[in-house]
Image (tube, rainbow, N blue to C red):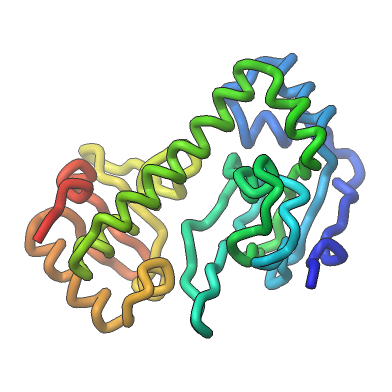
Length: 235
Protein backbone atom coordinates (compact mmCIF):
# COMPACT_ATOMS: atom_id res chain seq x y z
CA UNK A 1 0.00 0.00 0.00
CA UNK A 2 1.56 3.26 -1.13
CA UNK A 3 1.67 6.29 1.15
CA UNK A 4 2.08 9.01 -1.45
CA UNK A 5 -1.47 10.31 -0.90
CA UNK A 6 -0.36 11.43 2.56
CA UNK A 7 1.96 14.00 0.95
CA UNK A 8 1.00 17.62 0.47
CA UNK A 9 3.16 19.06 -2.29
CA UNK A 10 2.32 22.68 -1.51
CA UNK A 11 5.31 24.44 0.03
CA UNK A 12 3.19 27.19 1.56
CA UNK A 13 2.75 30.87 0.73
CA UNK A 14 5.65 33.30 0.91
CA UNK A 15 8.39 30.67 1.16
CA UNK A 16 11.36 30.57 -1.18
CA UNK A 17 12.25 26.88 -1.78
CA UNK A 18 15.88 27.79 -2.52
CA UNK A 19 16.20 29.33 0.96
CA UNK A 20 14.89 26.13 2.56
CA UNK A 21 17.22 23.97 0.46
CA UNK A 22 20.19 26.18 1.34
CA UNK A 23 19.40 25.79 5.05
CA UNK A 24 19.38 21.98 4.64
CA UNK A 25 22.47 21.88 2.36
CA UNK A 26 24.51 24.95 3.36
CA UNK A 27 27.66 23.87 1.51
CA UNK A 28 26.18 24.10 -1.99
CA UNK A 29 26.90 26.89 -4.46
CA UNK A 30 24.01 28.95 -5.92
CA UNK A 31 24.04 27.00 -9.21
CA UNK A 32 23.91 23.69 -7.35
CA UNK A 33 21.02 24.91 -5.20
CA UNK A 34 19.19 25.95 -8.35
CA UNK A 35 19.65 22.46 -9.81
CA UNK A 36 18.35 20.81 -6.63
CA UNK A 37 15.29 23.07 -6.82
CA UNK A 38 14.80 22.50 -10.57
CA UNK A 39 14.93 18.71 -10.42
CA UNK A 40 12.74 18.27 -7.33
CA UNK A 41 9.22 19.05 -6.18
CA UNK A 42 8.22 20.30 -2.73
CA UNK A 43 6.48 17.77 -0.51
CA UNK A 44 5.31 17.60 3.07
CA UNK A 45 4.09 14.91 5.44
CA UNK A 46 2.24 15.43 8.70
CA UNK A 47 3.51 14.06 12.00
CA UNK A 48 2.47 10.45 12.53
CA UNK A 49 1.92 9.81 8.81
CA UNK A 50 3.98 7.64 6.48
CA UNK A 51 6.10 9.06 3.69
CA UNK A 52 6.29 5.57 2.16
CA UNK A 53 6.09 1.95 3.28
CA UNK A 54 8.55 -0.92 3.17
CA UNK A 55 8.00 -2.84 -0.07
CA UNK A 56 6.61 0.13 -2.01
CA UNK A 57 8.28 0.78 -5.36
CA UNK A 58 11.35 2.96 -4.89
CA UNK A 59 10.07 5.59 -7.30
CA UNK A 60 11.48 8.71 -5.62
CA UNK A 61 14.23 9.87 -3.27
CA UNK A 62 13.60 12.55 -0.65
CA UNK A 63 15.71 15.30 0.87
CA UNK A 64 14.53 16.33 4.34
CA UNK A 65 14.35 20.14 4.49
CA UNK A 66 12.79 20.45 7.94
CA UNK A 67 11.28 18.13 10.54
CA UNK A 68 12.26 14.54 11.29
CA UNK A 69 11.52 11.19 9.63
CA UNK A 70 12.15 7.85 11.33
CA UNK A 71 12.66 4.74 9.17
CA UNK A 72 11.40 1.44 10.61
CA UNK A 73 12.60 -1.90 9.30
CA UNK A 74 9.99 -4.68 9.61
CA UNK A 75 11.10 -8.28 9.94
CA UNK A 76 9.49 -11.44 11.35
CA UNK A 77 6.57 -9.53 12.86
CA UNK A 78 8.70 -7.00 14.75
CA UNK A 79 10.11 -3.60 13.83
CA UNK A 80 13.34 -1.80 14.63
CA UNK A 81 13.97 1.91 14.17
CA UNK A 82 16.88 3.09 12.07
CA UNK A 83 18.64 6.46 12.42
CA UNK A 84 16.33 9.47 12.26
CA UNK A 85 16.53 11.60 9.12
CA UNK A 86 16.64 15.32 9.93
CA UNK A 87 17.33 18.40 7.76
CA UNK A 88 19.93 17.59 5.12
CA UNK A 89 19.32 13.83 5.28
CA UNK A 90 18.27 11.74 2.30
CA UNK A 91 15.72 8.94 2.21
CA UNK A 92 15.21 6.29 -0.46
CA UNK A 93 18.33 7.30 -2.38
CA UNK A 94 19.72 3.79 -2.95
CA UNK A 95 16.30 2.28 -3.71
CA UNK A 96 15.48 4.96 -6.27
CA UNK A 97 18.89 4.79 -7.92
CA UNK A 98 18.64 0.98 -8.21
CA UNK A 99 14.89 0.97 -9.00
CA UNK A 100 14.20 -1.42 -6.11
CA UNK A 101 11.51 -1.47 -3.36
CA UNK A 102 11.98 0.68 -0.24
CA UNK A 103 13.70 -1.27 2.52
CA UNK A 104 11.85 0.38 5.44
CA UNK A 105 8.76 2.32 6.43
CA UNK A 106 9.44 6.05 6.67
CA UNK A 107 7.25 7.64 9.37
CA UNK A 108 7.19 11.33 10.22
CA UNK A 109 8.08 11.92 13.87
CA UNK A 110 6.91 15.51 13.36
CA UNK A 111 5.46 17.46 10.44
CA UNK A 112 8.21 17.65 7.84
CA UNK A 113 9.03 19.50 4.62
CA UNK A 114 10.94 17.64 1.90
CA UNK A 115 12.07 17.80 -1.70
CA UNK A 116 11.02 14.85 -3.88
CA UNK A 117 13.24 13.55 -6.71
CA UNK A 118 11.72 11.15 -9.21
CA UNK A 119 14.12 8.62 -10.69
CA UNK A 120 14.65 10.45 -14.00
CA UNK A 121 15.25 13.78 -12.25
CA UNK A 122 17.60 12.13 -9.75
CA UNK A 123 19.78 10.88 -12.60
CA UNK A 124 19.73 14.33 -14.21
CA UNK A 125 20.78 15.89 -10.89
CA UNK A 126 23.65 13.44 -10.46
CA UNK A 127 25.21 14.60 -13.73
CA UNK A 128 26.51 17.56 -11.72
CA UNK A 129 29.88 16.36 -10.27
CA UNK A 130 29.53 18.03 -6.86
CA UNK A 131 26.02 16.68 -6.33
CA UNK A 132 27.13 13.23 -7.46
CA UNK A 133 29.88 13.39 -4.82
CA UNK A 134 27.29 14.43 -2.23
CA UNK A 135 25.10 11.41 -3.04
CA UNK A 136 28.13 9.10 -2.98
CA UNK A 137 29.04 10.41 0.48
CA UNK A 138 25.51 9.69 1.73
CA UNK A 139 25.59 6.13 0.41
CA UNK A 140 29.13 5.52 1.70
CA UNK A 141 28.15 6.64 5.21
CA UNK A 142 25.07 4.38 5.19
CA UNK A 143 27.26 1.46 4.07
CA UNK A 144 29.84 2.15 6.77
CA UNK A 145 27.26 2.44 9.57
CA UNK A 146 25.57 -0.78 8.46
CA UNK A 147 28.79 -2.79 8.57
CA UNK A 148 29.84 -1.13 11.82
CA UNK A 149 26.63 -2.35 13.46
CA UNK A 150 26.92 -5.83 11.96
CA UNK A 151 30.42 -6.07 13.41
CA UNK A 152 29.16 -5.37 16.94
CA UNK A 153 28.95 -8.70 18.79
CA UNK A 154 27.85 -7.72 22.31
CA UNK A 155 24.80 -5.74 23.43
CA UNK A 156 27.00 -2.94 24.80
CA UNK A 157 28.87 -2.69 21.49
CA UNK A 158 25.52 -2.39 19.67
CA UNK A 159 24.43 0.43 21.98
CA UNK A 160 27.78 2.19 21.46
CA UNK A 161 27.39 1.93 17.67
CA UNK A 162 23.86 3.37 17.79
CA UNK A 163 24.99 6.36 19.86
CA UNK A 164 27.94 6.89 17.51
CA UNK A 165 25.69 6.82 14.45
CA UNK A 166 23.48 9.53 15.94
CA UNK A 167 26.47 11.59 17.10
CA UNK A 168 28.43 11.90 13.88
CA UNK A 169 27.84 13.22 10.38
CA UNK A 170 26.64 16.52 8.95
CA UNK A 171 22.98 15.93 9.84
CA UNK A 172 23.51 14.75 13.39
CA UNK A 173 21.12 16.16 16.03
CA UNK A 174 24.04 16.45 18.48
CA UNK A 175 25.22 19.84 19.71
CA UNK A 176 28.72 20.62 20.97
CA UNK A 177 29.03 21.68 24.62
CA UNK A 178 31.94 22.52 26.91
CA UNK A 179 35.31 20.88 26.22
CA UNK A 180 33.98 19.29 23.03
CA UNK A 181 31.28 17.27 24.80
CA UNK A 182 28.50 16.18 22.45
CA UNK A 183 24.99 16.69 23.80
CA UNK A 184 22.66 14.27 22.02
CA UNK A 185 18.87 14.42 22.32
CA UNK A 186 18.20 10.69 22.61
CA UNK A 187 16.30 8.50 25.06
CA UNK A 188 16.89 4.92 26.12
CA UNK A 189 13.70 4.00 24.26
CA UNK A 190 15.20 5.49 21.08
CA UNK A 191 18.30 3.33 21.52
CA UNK A 192 16.19 0.24 22.23
CA UNK A 193 14.24 0.77 18.99
CA UNK A 194 17.37 1.35 16.92
CA UNK A 195 19.34 -1.57 18.37
CA UNK A 196 16.54 -4.13 18.71
CA UNK A 197 17.41 -4.58 22.41
CA UNK A 198 15.10 -4.47 25.43
CA UNK A 199 15.07 -1.15 27.30
CA UNK A 200 16.39 -2.86 30.45
CA UNK A 201 19.34 -4.21 28.46
CA UNK A 202 20.03 -0.75 27.03
CA UNK A 203 20.05 0.66 30.56
CA UNK A 204 22.68 -1.87 31.71
CA UNK A 205 24.81 -1.22 28.61
CA UNK A 206 24.73 2.54 29.11
CA UNK A 207 25.90 2.06 32.71
CA UNK A 208 28.91 0.08 31.41
CA UNK A 209 29.73 2.86 28.96
CA UNK A 210 29.38 5.43 31.75
CA UNK A 211 31.75 3.42 33.95
CA UNK A 212 34.24 3.46 31.06
CA UNK A 213 34.06 7.26 31.06
CA UNK A 214 32.75 7.45 27.50
CA UNK A 215 29.37 9.05 28.08
CA UNK A 216 26.80 10.09 30.65
CA UNK A 217 23.04 9.76 30.53
CA UNK A 218 20.68 12.51 31.57
CA UNK A 219 16.93 13.01 31.26
CA UNK A 220 16.12 12.76 27.55
CA UNK A 221 19.71 13.17 26.42
CA UNK A 222 23.17 11.60 26.35
CA UNK A 223 26.44 13.44 26.90
CA UNK A 224 29.22 11.90 24.81
CA UNK A 225 32.65 12.63 26.30
CA UNK A 226 34.81 10.44 24.05
CA UNK A 227 33.34 9.77 20.61
CA UNK A 228 36.53 8.14 19.33
CA UNK A 229 36.65 5.82 22.34
CA UNK A 230 32.97 5.01 21.88
CA UNK A 231 33.57 4.02 18.25
CA UNK A 232 36.45 1.76 19.25
CA UNK A 233 34.65 0.18 22.25
CA UNK A 234 34.89 -3.61 22.34
CA UNK A 235 34.15 -6.27 24.93
